[in-house]
Image (cartoon, rainbow, N blue to C red; front, side, top):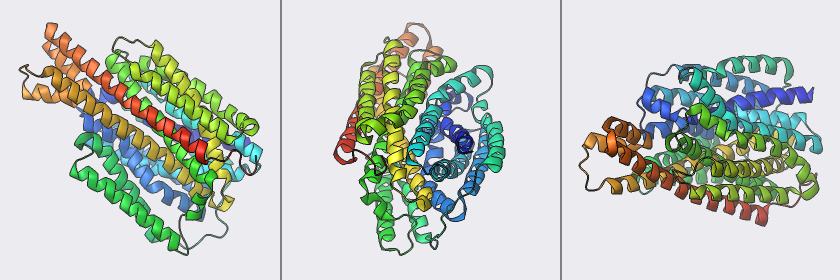
Length: 497
């Protein structure tokens, strides 16, 4: 029943991976419905990520120790409860808090699905196909989120983007109980509480700094302290794990180039994907003027291409080698992002369509072989921790993509719009709204009306587009770095290829 098991795992994965981008199309709606600021929007998106990334290594370790099916059931249930509560939030603060709960559940779901898959599909060739389908599902969820979110927002209130998760979670819990076998490390080591605390604290503090940077600036004291403190704590975690006789995470995994180089490639792929989706959904709605559903449908081609490319990449990797396929994928990601660096308020949809199709092709090609390379390098008993590292790379990459590209976008937008308003008498309250976000500027423009309102709209949209272009240039550099890492360090073929 392994292919039926894979289907159940993919549904569990889909409902969680869908979550981040289904929310992106709702961001302009949340500005109006909950009076969310740009800072609130950043935290609503990243609250899930910060808890997820902080807890995922611990969750993978607990799954190895106590059973991966149980970890999957608990995680899915917590995620479902958090989704239901998020749907009825009455303020940005409440929504952020419930997103933290969803992140806690997600920390148990994603690594459990991959570790169970790795144990169910022990044949390397079948495992490659299964991971191709798993990777396609992961990317598909991220890519079709705007479509689902747009349709829901067109027919229901904003809370439906969270409430839709609940029935899927209930069906998933039933199917997991009936179909999915349990597995665990047959010889688990003693618990590692010190490593647990250090990993949670280090990842949480580091990501707090990354997420807060667009608000306070990368040079601000709180951000610098958080980033340096997080890195120092993670260095302490590594030092402890090296010298501990019962480590939660065996550092020798990283000595294998299949594991470490593939992990970096996965991280940079998701940096590009999360960052690009965060920018594009706002550009399509606030600059080109599409509503949420129209924007979601125009993001759809990335899902279609990615969904075909990810399963096909397993076949290509078997014939051409992992390195060739991963590098080709990262080069395609670079080209796709490069095409997004020359947008304007009058560009229209065509350049976006071409760019996202190339982007989807690249992500689909790179993700599955890199993931298979990581998991194929590990013993089955350590699949939970190994898949947790893979998931950490995904979420850290995604958080960095949204945090870094989002901060570049915000800084460029604020600088351009402030310069454009220089010499004009703008009330402080209106000026704050204009500088805080494009959505705020458009609200002020509608209130002002007339030629002044039109000029403000043009200024805000051109400033925002300039920020998107600059942020995508950074994304291009990151994708190129990923390709260079893969060329230099990723083996041509795995041991079982």
